[in-house]
Amino acid sequence: MKRNTLLNALLATVVGLGLAATVQAQNAKVGSVQIENAYTRATVPGQQVAGGFMKIENKGAADQLISASSPVSGEVQLHEMAMEGNVMKMRQVKDIPVP
Image (tube, rainbow, N blue to C red; front, side, top):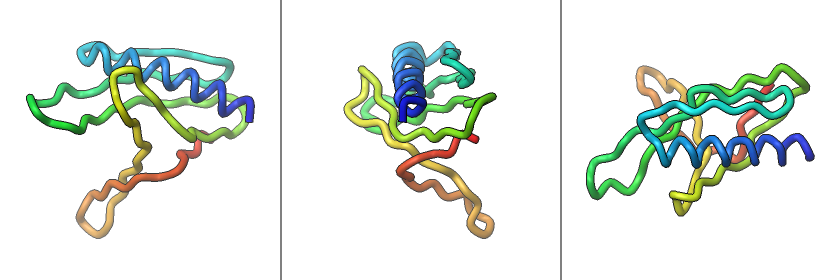
């Protein structure tokens, strides 16, 4: 559980930095978990939803991402994308494995 807390703190910091500065990718490291190129895309005026992206590399024991937060967003959700037939689909998930 402690590793999840560290991963959540690291992610919250990186996501917050990424949302505040959408033109720069952000990097961070805690223990064996490295987050690289965290960023969000700028939205058009009036758009209520944005996407954030990053690469998470874990050189230690398997872990999982269970939540995210940002000081500039009312809500942050975890999603995965997968092909279904010839269509890319996105769905909300409760956690993301970080092997």
